Image (tube, rainbow, N blue to C red; front, side, top):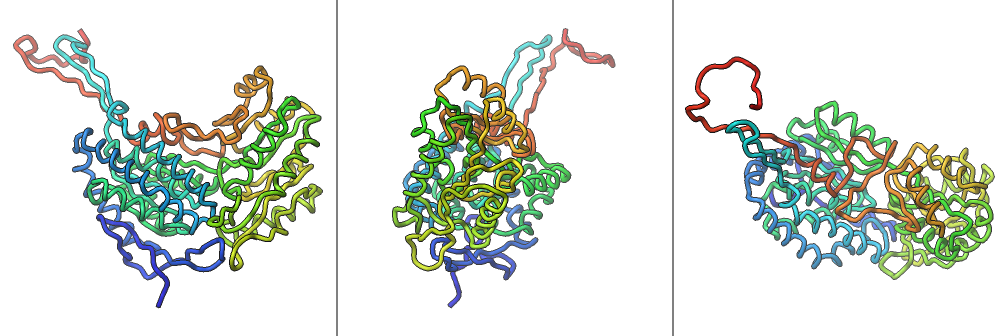
Length: 498
């Protein structure tokens, strides 16, 4: 008997698709294949987009009040299913259950934001802009849109985009990561139970073939993407060339600048939480601690003490940190540790020696702390996406700011200090999209927008918040005049507002 196959969700039902291609889906804590996922071909892409295209006119014309009722129903069902979703995330991604529950909770915030779509779609109206002429502006949906989401947040990242797109009247084709696809099917069933018409939300599982099919398809009007910078750049270029609106969020190298007056214990706790949560597989993870002046030695000692006390293992066993997503990715991350050590960094805590609390040979790497890292080392320059925290030592605040601003990424950063003036100056001078002051992971609340600068964002629009509403709608201005005897006759002159 073969492994269970996770299919697509098209037209309100799960389907195996038109190809026999499939990929293994692992349980990262055991290293064993748990199920397989269907990989879409061209025919599956066409079928998925056709379902979204067919459902668009009816959903676009559904009154906003009725759309909102679906959103409220989905919000309730999502809250009731949060534990089931968290378990599915842990089973395929590996993050500990409490972290998975937090992921669902942050996605739920965007759903709640989208429940207020009626207010957010309001236009403007001017009566008698010219004699007998009225003008009104409105925002209308784009049509079928694609959301391409990464493996590290299989629930939260889709919920950054899907609820807003649907609330605004669009239909959505979600292409989740093939590494952890099951959560997307659970979301599809919740949408259906909430009363969403078939075809408004579609799940298309697959690899690059499915992605390229969506980027090129003429009926897909916009693409939202989250992933690595090289792929984000590719998605932006290819989809833009096909005439689509694109927001592509890329990678990061997030710094935590620590000034000498910072509370060392508070900062060490924050560095542990931000560096090793979700095994470092977060685009907002802190991967570099920039220790300014005399704070370096006590801070490194405090972080090391905490890192050694973390329990690594199966995320379903109450551990602090789970495995990485695949064996290949674990090996890539350990390669960076070896490279940093060979280049002269000091391995203060070595996660390669971890003895995980798990059955089987899962994809584990324990918390790893490197000191005396320099900007020339690959462990600093590259996005590692694992539980590796690098400490770079500088002498002054100015050196720290220059280091952050000189990095090609500009996703998130944080400063830890008790000096309000220094914090205010940092927030003004730093060239990064999201800034935390004594907050290590400055992910905005849902009614603000998420997004970085420089090589962390391709396109002009950030995720969720007001930016998200604007991305999934376009403006239309209607100028109207009802005929009366005073406006009869021919006049070839340019219209004037008299």
